[in-house]
Length: 279
Ligand SMILES: [Zn+2]
Image 1 (cartoon, rainbow, N blue to C red):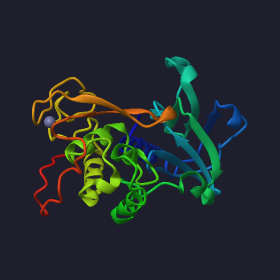
Image 2 (image 1 turned 180 degrees about the vertical axis):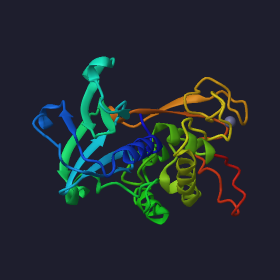
Image 3 (image 1 turned 90 degrees about the vertical axis):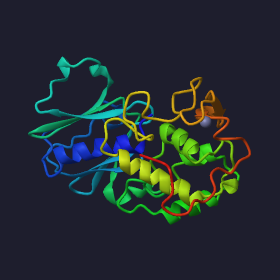
Image 4 (image 1 turned 90 degrees about the horizontal axis):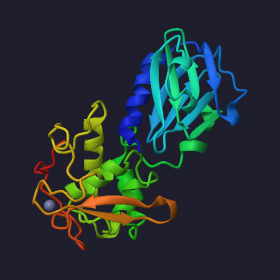
């Protein structure tokens, strides 16, 4: 599942390629937008909001998309010939300008709305970890409002703060010494958890390889994500999978039983400047 940093990068790349340009090709391959034609409009901006993407056009129009599990936006040179690409049937939209073409693959959410109505689609989101208006105090306040939520669920809840996906959830819990089932109300230092989420996403927003350990080598770049059954890099204990959530929202967290003991509130508030975490 794409995390906020991936979405941010895709938006940034499209913004650099498309902003200020006139749409010369408009092709929607989803029933609800089949008759939509954006040719002649100007792309004002492409922005991310948490894990949502917003293509803003002239005359108060926004294309709102979400990548969910495996959606993707790519920038290709114009003219883009989709008959020459593999898996063209997975293309949901093609937006071309004279120089560049944005191609949306496997997008499960694709809707047009007035730019002035964007809040209807993304207004519920908490502060955006990669937004210009990032607000750590507000993120902490939103987390504190649900003290009985588990730390793992609370980190994924985009209403608290927007941008954390499964990878960062795993890494943040490990780095703060939190068992996935620790209740938010029992976390020793919520401010440090939020600050670390911000630090990690910012550090990785322009990187191709996501690094939370300070070591970009493949297999060493993360502490626990995807490493169940292997040894903890910090203490050598075998990492374990842990399922949480309900219904269709079940996700798995890999954790170290020794570094993230059950019932612990995680690492105590540290004197400023001594956080050992590296990004
Ligand atoms: Zn450990």
